[in-house]
Length: 378
Image (cartoon, rainbow, N blue to C red; front, side, top):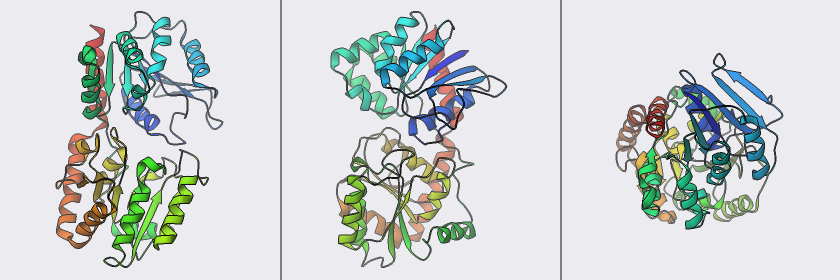
């Protein structure tokens, strides 16, 4: 097959500045290109050439200079003009569909959804018009698929799930000595580290975690909060929300260490800084890859019982899910439970790693997508 993949306009591929959509899409299609011809179109970046070719030319990445969303898709379609493809996949931008359909009236189009967000921005009429023009919709987790099918029953037959993978050679447990060295390097040895990894925005719930850790100080005197990430991929500047979190931590006497933005090539090391990983999100997340990456890395997981997270973390088996996701007390209780019970901690860590290896393979994602492609090409 010859496949065209149109990515969002915000971040480049390979994901040198991060971005969950870009990271996931690159992981999928560099594997797809082992057997098929893939052309990816993404945003340009000064560190990357306008065109790159990999895997003996089977993977081509074309990069479009930064512009607004409209100029980006216009330029992307100019780059694709005159070429033929067996399938076109549009990543997380439903509004691109009508423009792509006009240029490729007979080519099967797959819309890939990584969350509920961008379909939720559309009116029912706009969503229906877009779904009529696509041959299929792939979602990264069945929670998104089921929600979309309920919202748009007329198009329910078009939706399929290709659950995301984890690179278990990159995200893996490290020997105790290696973990000690990493923690010393970051000045985080000798404390019980509660780890947050993700965008530092209100919807990810870091303020809830600050309050939870404040409640743990008497029970775990050397507790510390470690926040890995930034407000936006590639950016580490202060934002009003980050200032709020700092002020809250000072007022509550919670030691907090912000690492700032960490590039994707180094993010696996950050999971080794934590004694427990916590995802206190307020969002109805799609897949939320940080949870499966923590599970693969051998760190116990506590997460909000929201959206697609419950398909990744099985409560009491591969982590602890918190239904009262806005409650600092609920998160503090879950963290304390893990701290006080080494047997539970060990069991969850072992089960989580096995679950990731068995259920979250990038090759499985590729195979599910290929099956979807075969359906829409009939």
